[in-house]
Image (cartoon, rainbow, N blue to C red; front, side, top):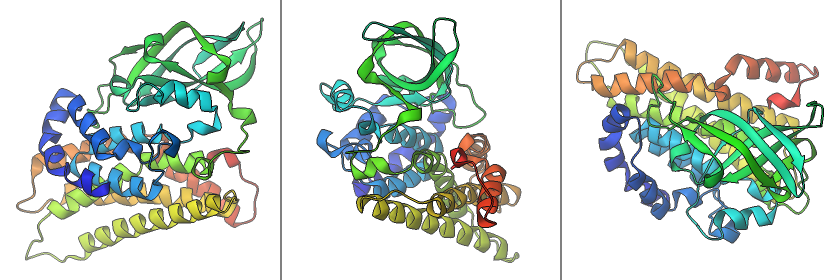
Length: 358
């Protein structure tokens, strides 16, 4: 599958400037990624998926090395295919039973309201920055279930088909201009019980092994892999200058390569754990998050170093676009390096930590 994605990289790289100018990834490219098997990487095997998280790491990073917007967009659309079986098999049939190529966009900020009605809930709300909204045919969002007097009772995630929500084109970022992180609006939509589940009472009993991978690890990697790809691209594009020492950029390259290896090792350890019917312990979870935020930091540092000293022969248009993409990506919650390192440090010292940051 990775080789099939690699075959698309030259065309994706050639389209990057157009994606940045128009603020959109062509829907034909999304179809080509479907045909290459990319969106099957984290999809359940029962619905044609490959269940290959290690392949997802490599393919997403390489997509971003060709076009950061495309890698970010595709990475989030793909990761939204993962983990759905913790909900209800009927949900999977709803999504993929009639359309094997269905994609989901998502937002887990609880900015919606759920009122109990017969057979389910009535949902109203607005969610911002739903990556890939123009390409998705399903929406997964968080909302608060309220009682008769409006008091919050539970925190739920719900799924809705495209007919139940409106996409408002709002995304106009400094970088990552093609990711379609638009707002979605839902007004009095009915959500049946089987498409609503509580985050507070998740059960992993009988869930396939790969769907027991920790959500913080999977979703934050979707925000880090594109940064690694971006760093690889600009470091490869910078030509050595005969009059300057290579130490600074050699260090950047080794830092990025170190992070790629750490991310891969951690994923392999997570997969080994869940396939042995276990669940990752605190040490593995925090190591994964620590290495993930440090990967984002090292990648951003590498892109910044090339931006400061681009050298002769470096493509200035490419560098300027990638720099903007990286600055925008760093604002994502997955890159909160100080917060994560503080928690990892507390854990290393034997102090109590809040598991929600993992």
